[in-house]
Length: 282
View (cartoon, rainbow, N blue to C red):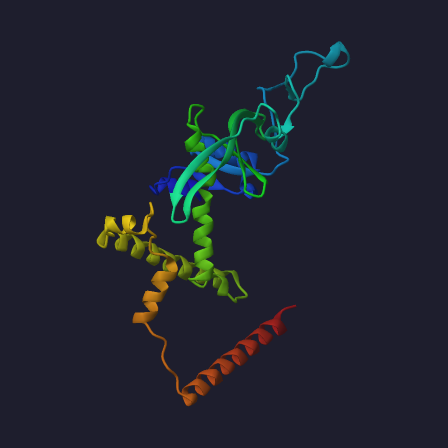
């Protein structure tokens, strides 16, 4: 899917994903081969090397005893460690970085970054960034990235926090666009519902963009309220505007009764159809 999006010319700076995908070694390696920058969350027990290991078939028996090995082995100056242990090391220096300015103030937090080495499923040794961020409750999250070795810490911190926008889009789609209202029994029905949700969120995104371009806010408003950033149009705002121009019809008691009766008839027909299908099944 990512390769297809890239071939179709969809512009994106980096790929951010949770640890369901980040823990998959071949997935990160494939992104790296396609020159796609990623920031992939990983579990706290992910093993990394702090010094470059060597993977290969030794030239002779280990310790000079026995038959020569035929399978690749990992040799390293130090054993692998969990990323959670890297965060607790004395030489892991935390630094406070301002990520971005939002409507609710500045997003700042303690970060730490360390160059580490990992071994892919095919035995390839890869050097990556280990990005660590401490939350307000003291918990630490971990990510691996193939960003260039000379990338700035500010850039790594921004990539570490960029998955918020994807999660925000999912939450808006569920709470405002009806994504969580799906009630279906087949995969195709789920696809249809998802397609309508995508179209609705795309329409809202286009509306928000048009609103920002065609109706720019007066800069004096920010000075009047003594804030750095004025709020942008939200999906809830667009939904409110739509309800004003597309009001729900006021039903009379008779119309409401007919609508309920029609709904019950349709449900009865659906049950009859399912029972026929079940009766024909072995």
